[in-house]
Image (cartoon, rainbow, N blue to C red; front, side, top):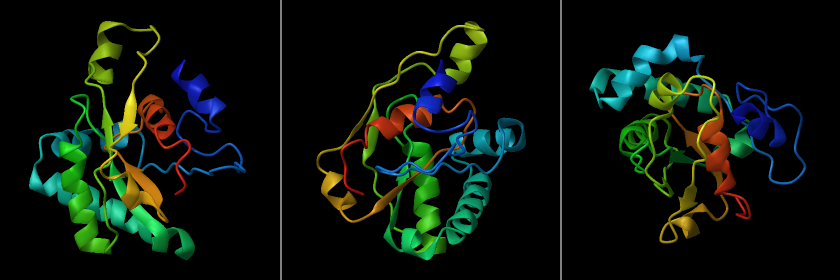
Length: 173
């Protein structure tokens, strides 16, 4: 089910664009598959300085490869965790700004939900639960004229990112 939602949005199961979208094009990049970044992701979740710095450097390097017109208008949006807050990725976003100069906005929030990792372990083969994301109305004005770049510590099924992107529908990045 998560793959089908991602596919409907124009992405393969790894978040790679299937084709260019005409309206509100969205690109999804990953630093590696779950097996490649598992330890790093857990370190980021624990707010350990070394993994946060390593992740920020990797993201900053990836952002430097974006087309100049995209990079100039980019603003980093940290993905909230299952508690609904972006605490872990906020630390990475702050460090990316130090390294790249690209600003960040903590504008994305979600309804608290069970960790998808835990859900998949406890309910193998079951459809992933629906996730609900929204933009913070107090921060949304800061998105005007910018291209949101959502960062997350893991891209596995694409379920989280596809749900989060829906919160940006109708926004003029």
